[in-house]
Image 1 (cartoon, one colour):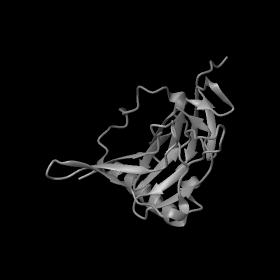
Image 2 (cartoon, one colour):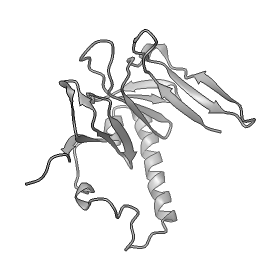
Image 3 (cartoon, helix red, strand yellow):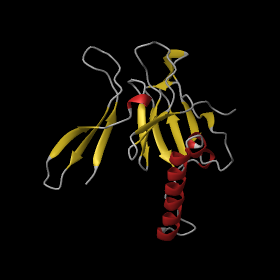
Image 4 (spheres, one colour):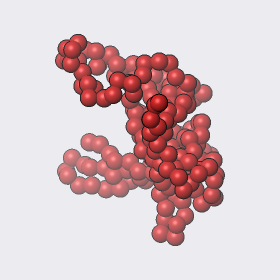
Length: 192
């Protein structure tokens, strides 16, 4: 029927955790917790104050903190179909928000490891397909999923050319220019 998945956090004695759990609902209406399996040779880094998003069967875990202050805690991806973990480029943020639009992952705010007491107002944009390129099976599944979603959007779109579901957004934030895989944008500063 579906599942809510969580990863990491801290234990009662404040140790960063690296396990994944799913809360699933059965057709009978009952709920239960199930621990996600993964291969022991590629354990993820235990972390807390991170964020995660799903793209298809892949759970992307971003940033966060570990028990070692300042440790590099990059982006890790858990493929729920193969139970494998992948590590890719670093996003050194914690207590931030993240969301996925098309093939771009956006990370907003939070704190950076270099200045952990000063909140940031930057948005970082990551091209998920570029980040997944070193992992062929993950890349192919994600590329197929995202292209299928685009095709379905084209077929089911009911908006006219004059009406957009995003019409309330500031057009300057909706850039269509090509961007690098990991570019930061600071929307908190006034342009002068």
